[in-house]
Structures are given as structure tokens and as C-alpha cells.
Image 1 (cartoon, rainbow, N blue to C red):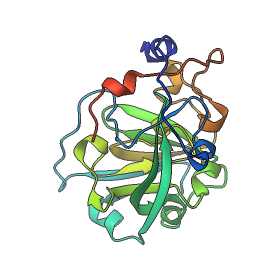
Image 2: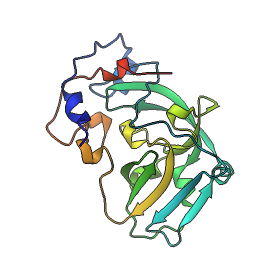
Image 3: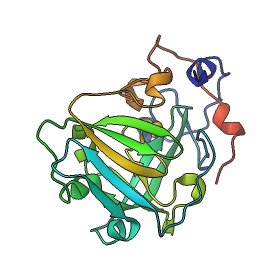
Image 4: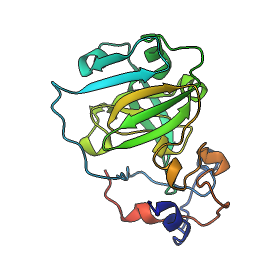
Length: 224
């Protein structure tokens, strides 16, 4: 059993920097604004042979589909700017991503009406659950570029999800499968002490008691 949720509860506060009024409004409670892009993940960074890489779509669909990377790149793309928020209490404003809107990706599929949830499956042995309704917004992506460049290995190349209105563990790096589900099911961190909904503005960090202790673990991690 992973103890990250318990460990995060015990971390010391991070001093808040000088923020403008606009930044204060945009920053969720308990977060610290940074211009860095911290690198946090479980397990080793995957190495891919792109001639063999695939994205599998399965579950509550009329037919299972397998997409190549070229298939994803050939779809209608968008570039958007959004803020992102990590449960380890850092936020980064105005990040720029390019990829396929999830709602546009859905047009390629025959999803059954009973499908209400999605489980994103990613390497290595990671998964996270999100309601389909959450994925129909105009800022939820299957992303392959960041700040005008291809994703780096450590930030999820070749494909990741970006679900910016939820804590960033819901934005799975190294995406390999999309499972449509009739019933909700907890993912990796949701099974290990993290909140199922993960709304940053409600501070839905953990599945246990409410917490008001800021977190500074990310300041000691590698970053871009």
C-alpha cells in the first residue's frame, strides 16, 4: 500500500509569494504558484518503440479500437492555454498544450449510452478514473505537445491527458488505454488515499479527513 497521502499530510508549510489580485483569484486554496514544471510520477519513465505504440479503446463501446500515434496526429488538433494544479500543492498558470479535444476524439468511437465513466490506463501500471461529463469540456485534451514542442519523456511523451479542472494526477502521463465504464471504479491514487473527485477549488485532495497543511515536497523534485 502506498503511503503518499499520509506523508503529504505531514509536510511543512510553503511560504506564499507576492501575488497579484488576479493571481490570488485564480489560485486554488492551499496552492503555491510556480513558474517551474515539477516532475512527479510513480515508477520508471517508459521507453517506446513508436512503430509498436498503440492506444487501446475498450469497455462500454460497440467495438474495441486500436489507434496508432499517426492516427492521433491525423485528427483535428487544438492549442489551448490553461492553469494546472497538483495535489502536492503547486500550481502553474497559463500552460500551453496541443492535442485532440477529448470530445472530438469521442466522435471516432461508438460509445454505448450506459458508459458514464472513463478509466485512463497508462504506463507503468497506472490508472485514474474520470466521469465522462468531466471530459466534455473545451479544455480537456489528449495532448502531445507542450509550449510548442513535443512532450518530453518525463512529462508524458508521446501522449497524455490534460484534465485541468482536476488535480493533475487525473491527467495521466504515458496514456495507453481508454476504458469506458458503466459504473465508477477507483484508479491508482484513488485506491491509495486520494479523493475520487479531485476538485482543486474544493481542496478535494484526500479521501480521509479534511486537511489545511500546505505541502512542500514538490520543491525538492526535479523540474523543467
